[in-house]
Image (cartoon, rainbow over the protein chains, first blue to last red):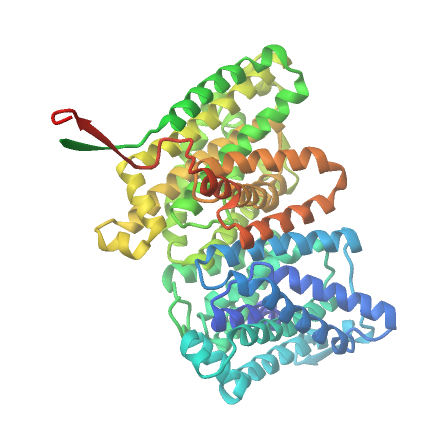
Length: 287
Length: 341
């Protein structure tokens, strides 16, 4: 029973990891950019949520009304002002620039909020649970999982059913022809990062309600997101959800065997999948 | 008139700079006899960072292997120093050498796995690997688990009885390490393998079509750089005398700073890491009091250089003065025989 419980909790945790990963997967799909600052942006969103809840005394989930647009705007500006200038050449410059951004965000957060761990209070939501048979499920993890499915379905819809999604796919397939068709790739890329950071805002707030966070934990969120993307297969958003679930289950099962093995178990499952299926379980694109 | 052409790799500038380098090394060797303890410590740290940066530059700037996980080998080397001296009974110097051997051995399976990831995904994959190293060493209770351990006094004393001679020895080891690393990088680049590497750096597709085995070349560079990084890790923690998983596998200390050094100085050149290290330490020594502001500034400077001058400070200097300090370029010289003149 313990094992069944761990698998279920791990699956729900996987929803959060899929949210970390979805934004990463999206911008890689559109512009082949791997954003090393992604984890730190998640933590930035968590802090913005914290400040919003404190300033307006609102519920953390309501803070999304503020944090999503702020993060999206930040994403658009960041892409137009900084990241667009790094694209096109080798992969070194976007990598190093986002690495620099990561260090900047971490230290700005450290400066503003100090190194003390913080947490957002969400009242009854934090402890509420529903009992199904002998397994009790937290309402918050359940809600996170549902939100993850909704976000991925939403991204999937945008990607394949809307004009914006067509523009994303067009610039991703062939920048030059897309430009000739009247698409401004710089603007499209800006929108892609805006959308990515809007997802990051949701991920950051759910993270901040679930656990405590401090300015230094962004790196490991990036790693979880990245592992979910690779396990699921590049370019496949539903694969990313599967990747997140596999990672979450590996971690909770690892923790069940030995509390010190939680993170290690997740990494090892990732490495095993990498060794057996280097393109992930459900790849849609090569590289 | 017969004009013969000769290809040479050196020039007046490289002759002068090599001579100055030898003089500088001689002066640096004598430092323990006339400098204070603090200066010696700082110089030792500069040498180790310069060596780390040169190796990272060889990986990223020449082999195109942008690793964000080289702290895996720094920490591994450090822990090997502790484990081999404490449980293997090895002399610290033997343990440092052995750390290099073991670093090479462990780098082989790591490379085999990581090379399945391309480009930016390789970068984060190496970071995962470093996390695996950190979490694994945190599980070893004999090495102090998560809280780490100190090098026992008896082992420290086995290096030398007096504190000042230990510090001198540690300094000379760091100096020797940086000289060996830079010479290794220069001779690697001058060799056949280095030609292959430079070709890969300039155009991977073309290099492959000329028959260069790209995978094997990169693999050898990765293993060699990781092995030497493990030796540097052992030296770093010989200076510190205390190790913990968080300090040994710190991505900021052993990778972020190193990347900034290489980017600021100029990636893909031997001179770049040298300039970068000098700038980094100049900034650090003048702005250390600013704390986090200093790190923010460092990040801003690195991003600005990446956007404005992707070849770094040395790239700016070289484009203006056509200067090369190490005998690595190719020049054609005409040697006319005076038959008809």
